[in-house]
Structures are given as C-alpha cells and as structure tokens.
Length: 193
Image (cartoon, rainbow, N blue to C red; front, side, top):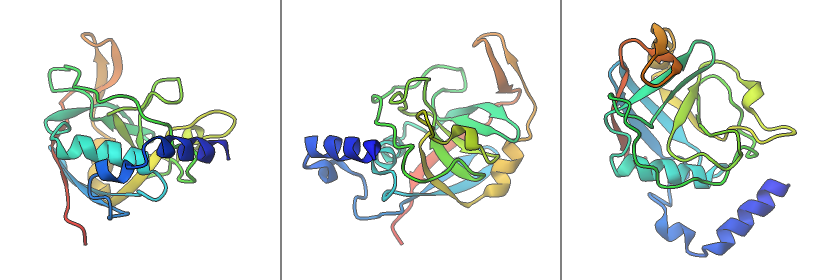
C-alpha cells in the first residue's frame, strides 16, 4: 500500500507526466532487441510499471542501448546489460527512478527487470532478464527488483545467452563476464498493434 501512495505522490508532482511519455497510449509497448545472438522482442507493462517503462523507452528511442553489451551472465539466474560499451565504458545515465517492485509482477523466467544497487530507488539504465524463477528478487520485507515486462519472442535466444562461457574480468574486477562479448546491436520501439 505504501508503494502505491508513493507512486500517486510522484505522479501528482508532475500532472503532465503523460506529456513526456513515449508512445503514451500504448499500454503494452513492444521493443525489438537485436543482439549478436539473435532477436528478442519484449512486451512491456505500462499499467503495472509506468515509470520504469517510460524510463526504458527513453533509452530505447534515443539509441542509448545500441552497441552495448550484456556484461553479466549467470546461468539459471540472470542475463544483465544495457550499461556498458564493448570496451566497458559506462554509458550516460539519465538519473535514478522510483522502484516499482511492488507492482505484482514477479521475477520469473523470461521477464525483464531493472538492475539496481542495494538501495531501493537506484535503478537507472541497466536491466536484466530472469533466466530462472528468482523469487529472492521479489519484494517482501525489503524492496525487490522491478519487473516491467516479459519476452514475447526469442526466449531461445535468451536461453543460449545464459549458457555462454564466462570468466573473471581483471579490468573491471567482475565475475560472470562473457568471454566473447554479447552485443545489443540495436533496440527499437515497434509500432503499436
């Protein structure tokens, strides 16, 4: 209940919130992700996660996700990307958004969610796909990770991504980095159906 009160408060701060939205009348916009391993189409849920969907679409239509990598892959857990170039240069961040993890959507196989730091309202541009049923990422006594859509086509591409060889990356001091980069070549908003 506290989440929805906070959401209404935030929306009331900007009574013209719809004016800044991308494709505002499409409640379930679809985004095509052309990767170096194939195409994934995600259907977003603006009803349950309006702030998160608008944030994601802002990065999509500005071309900010183009030529980024999926930098973290953990089999049976997640495939994460959207934040770095092939050379591990951090991409521009528009700012953090309100955590919408209390929206009823679960971190189940095939869903897309926002990555964040340990603090609740720190998601900005990085996202991940759930390649397992990750109930530990759902909200409970603590904030969870906000799911904002699901794969409509291309689950087999995600499954293949989740199986690539990973290693420790000395330069970034990270585990679970693909040995061969997996590129998000282009992200594009599909026309409303």
